[in-house]
Structures are given as structure tokens and as C-alpha cells.
Length: 113
Image (cartoon, rainbow, N blue to C red; front, side, top):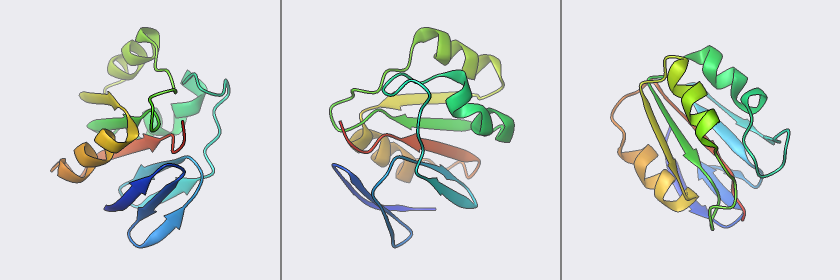
């Protein structure tokens, strides 16, 4: 998977345009991602990612970084076998995703605020 572009409210992955928050797995994109608590990431929001067990998880928190990832959630992620975690504003997270060489990577992106 490759992220072709990102701008507020819009991401193009492998030539396909997405306008809702999404998760990118090595073999699929899950679009229309809604979080249990709006702008606060919770365990249930990433259960499918934890079950997948990627080596690397990249979280894009939005253009201005409004989506919050608490220390409790970061610990939960690390305690469930994910070796590397990056939490950044979405533009920087896109760059990290595209630069990451490990193919066992997953990303979760908030596309707006």
C-alpha cells in the first residue's frame, strides 16, 4: 500500500480516493472508521489492529492533531506486541508510513481536524 496524497479530509491510497477516516492494512483499506469517543482513541477502536499484530503502527491524529491518544492507549498498544508506535499529525504520519520499510505495518488516520 502507498499513500499517494493527503490533504484535510481527503486521502488517496493506491489511486483510490477516501474522504472518511480509515485504517490501512498491508492487504486492505478499511474506510469509514468511526471511533467510540469521537476524538479520543479507545481500545475498541483499534481491536482489529491489535488482533492483526503488526510490527509497526502509525497513527495520524488529524491535520491539527485533534485526535488524542492517551498514555494508557499507548501502553495498551505496546503491551499487545506492537514493537513500534508512531503518533503524529496526519501529514507527518503519511510521510512516516510511506518511508517505513517494514511491510508488516498498519496505519490509522483521522483525516480532518
